[in-house]
Image 1: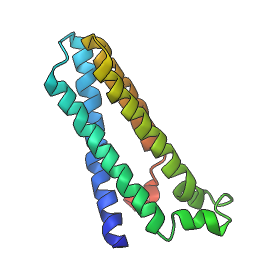
Image 2: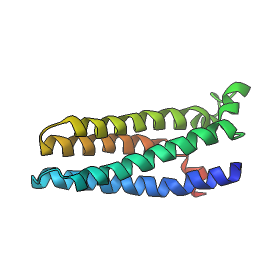
Image 3: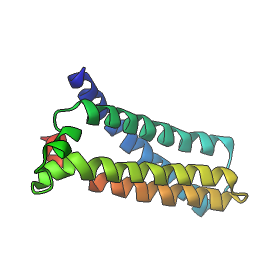
Length: 144
C-alpha cells in the first residue's frame, strides 16, 4: 500500500503542477485580453483546483503511513537534519498553505462580479500557491 501511494503521489504531482501552470497562463491571458469570464474558464480553473486537492489528500494519507513522515517528528531529531525537516514539517505545512491559497483564489473568483477580477483572483492565488509548492518539493528525492 505504501509503495502504491508513493507512486500515485509522485505521478499525480506532474499532472497537478502542469494543470496549475496551464490555469495560471489561461487566466492571465484571459485577464490581459479583456475577454468575458465564461463557464469554460471556471471549469479549467476547477481542473487545477481538483488535481491539487487530490494531490494534497494523497500526500496527507502518505504522511501518516510513511516511515519518513509524521514518525520523524515524534521520534525527535528531525529539526536538526534539513532533509528530515523538509520531509516531516516543511513540505506538508507549506503545501497545505498553498492549497488553501488556491482554494481562496477559486472561491473568491466565483463570488466576484467582473471578469477581470475573476481572472486576476485565479492567476494570482494559483501562482502564489504554485511558487510555494515548488519551493518545498523534495527535489533530490523526487528526481533522483
